[in-house]
Amino acid sequence: MHTYAVFLRGINVGGVRIAMKDLAGALASAGYANVSTLLASGNVVLEADTGDAAALKADVEAVLRGRFGYEAWVIITTPGQLASIVASYPFPAVDDGIQRHDYVVLAATADAVQRVLDACPEPSPGELVAAGDGVLYWQVPRGSSLETRVARELGRARHKAVLTTRNMNTLRKVLARMGS
Image (cartoon, rainbow, N blue to C red):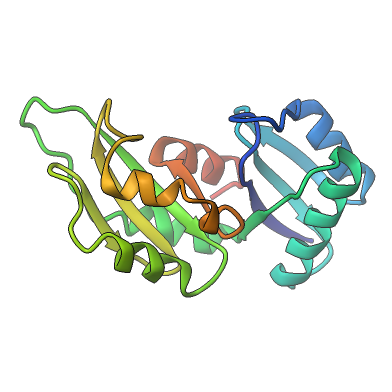
């Protein structure tokens, strides 16, 4: 069995509402083992027979579409990939009195991160962005994570099938749930 983190895009923040117990039940019924959810934003840890993350992605999306009737998109990571993503967060904590959010934007395609960077060559003041391995690292002052240049770009419809954002605390919790 292979352990994976599955990050759902766009649930419980708009029109698509899915209870985490229903999500876990649907995936368990589809044959996945040790399915657990974390928070209400579509974070799942599960075990699958396949070592093929692309096949897992396609199957999980099909299960979600069939069970919940929405255009589902997920991003899959292994424990090693997620550990590397978390360990590679490039922005140090700064003690300047400004509270910040530390985010990772997970990408389903290789070019998605570059498209965001190309669209936002100059982030808003106080905002930091850096490309990582299949992710965009993003630090933004609290209270402005919906208003900055990068935030507005991330909210564009063209990215909804390929990007999803999580804060670093959530990723650490998912990683711990994976046993890493």
